[in-house]
Length: 384
Image 1 (tube, rainbow, N blue to C red):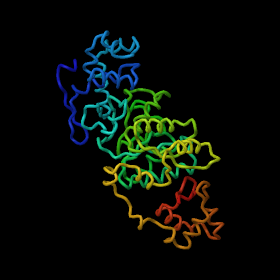
Image 2: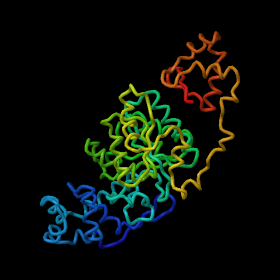
Image 3: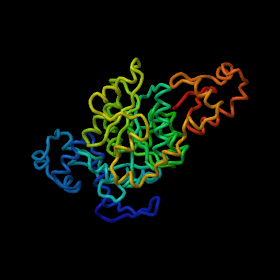
Image 4: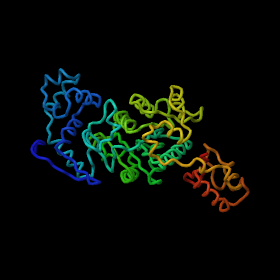
């Protein structure tokens, strides 16, 4: 079947119908091997539509672009049946394919210099999602994980969608906390949407799809090749009004995301850390270069456009938990805890001269008030 012969209509979540005839040329353009995102954007500007690109002659393609001969050959000889197969494979897996001309394609993402021509989506993606990206080290310290947890929780409660990359460390903590808070989160993959990386995050990926969306621009089955992740990062920043870097070394991929965010006209913030820790050096470099200093959710809200903040549910600062309202026992436990080194419940109880069961209720209360966080092994760390 050739895409010009008939029109299929399929219904996806929320009952929105998609015209497959209009989508297939976009999908085909995305599948041309060796065609980089910047090149796709350039030839689209030149020819106007994917249909025009595929109708062009070799001479026209050579005159209008700097494409290599082998890429031009693949465009001229692309078999549209491959795009049809790709669509059917995605449909069978419950994947929605959005293209630049579709109503659900994220509005903000369209504004970057080289937007993806299609997005594979598992879950629900809204065109006007108010998004903030939280990114950072895969080898995050306890401090970095807890900052990620705190920011993700507070920003999600305010009504923002949290975007990250499903990676270990900061990313995974941000996604997980938003899911716990029953908020919306978007995970952007550096592989095909059916290839979850790292593999141990398959369960997390399923939960993300149920509470927001998994997103990829790569064709089905694409492995998580190293070169895919910088390409992926432009989508993380492109979806977001602001990007917050929580922990990053000087060679971190998060700095690539920050650079792309700056090029896209997004706000960039960085969380300060321990000056002796390598994982803080990237954030400190960003701050020196002009990135905003991020110490709490308030710093993030402060740089967002008014059209977004006016719709958020911001906590009454007079009602926020204050140390002045803590009990004497809670103040005692808080004073014993560190922001960086977790302490075991037995250690806390011993220093306080009490039994573990006697301080358990206090620890639970402090955790509910977001003053502390429990980490595996019955250990606790201070958040504020």
